[in-house]
Length: 494
Image 1 (cartoon, helix red, strand yellow):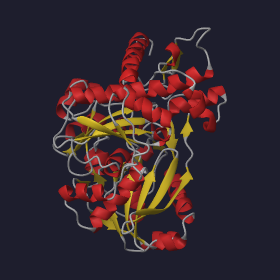
Image 2 (cartoon, rainbow, N blue to C red):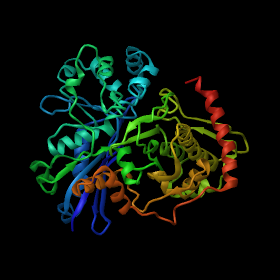
Image 3 (tube, rainbow, N blue to C red):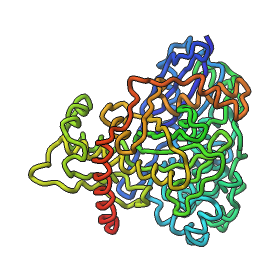
Image 4 (tube, helix red, strand yellow):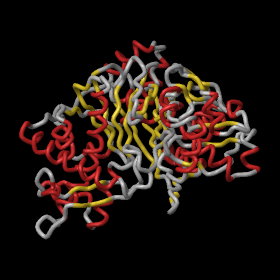
């Protein structure tokens, strides 16, 4: 048996997936939980060592024979995190993550130094948002003192795992496009943006080589092989950000198919063969990890919304589906703006979660739960609508992530977005995408050939796919209008 190993470094856990590509079977999939440090100023951080510990813990749960069967590795990782390395590869500080909102001031300062948000969009492709890496670097520069002077290399989370596995320092264009300082159109670093981040230092000297196309970045170090049971010298692919690897893992490599990932955060993204620059900056103009582009909308709160509602109500996960099913579409007028972690789209990093529309008739647990589900989905529908307005074809929606496991939520997505929903049997998203990228590397697939390879290894779960109901679409159009009016009314207080 030969397998490819896909690693996915998330916010809550690290996952290790072994895929037997001859039998087209996932033969092992294990994970290890990760801690998350958060405080009242918006900080959200992890220690890079926790990632390495989780990697070893996850691999230790897998049968040694399966571990030894791996012939290539691909790595997916949470985007935007800032991993500052010293000259000898030491991590200089805790890693600020994508959901860290403590750098609002730094975002404003960088934007002003560059000439304003519109100038950022026009020249680089994206505004400087609080989740992106750029503001984290400026934050480090202003607070770390001598540690910042020791900064030798800037990496992203998946880059750091690649560095641990191979000893090679590099970034790839897909993940790098979430830093805020990659010129999206030309796939190169923006010197002017780097100067806006720190006018006193040449940050370009701290950036590793940029990989524009997928391929081999290095081979597995003997020290790592000895600790894990993996084979020394096996190739490691470029990997990418979790959304870019999720695109591969859901077959989103050509126009028409859109992926909606419903995890802690929510994303909607599509493939494009040319840059898609949103003049309003709401759709992120990212590159794909397959040589194209990946226009994307991100919300900071997806399953966070339902988890917070469950926790508030003391509802077990096993009871969630039954309770939500008791509430009618539209939750009898209860509206949730689920901004528990602040929000990226709309750009409201200081926002808080709100529940409105309660009265003595509808204030019931089932309505609060359904409202949380609907609020998270309405935010993602906005992204789909915005993409269509920018000319992106959307004829099929592939769902992935924890939210997709709920039958009620799947149908709600189809009805709210008025689009057929597809569920894949290989519903491991980014980890499976990383494994498929590694397989494509083994088979020396050109970019155009990768689509065929991916299609050959993906199958629909027809029993879980669903289509929109005409009557439900009308009901949800009205509920979506109420949500948008509530958002407009409350935006001013944030």
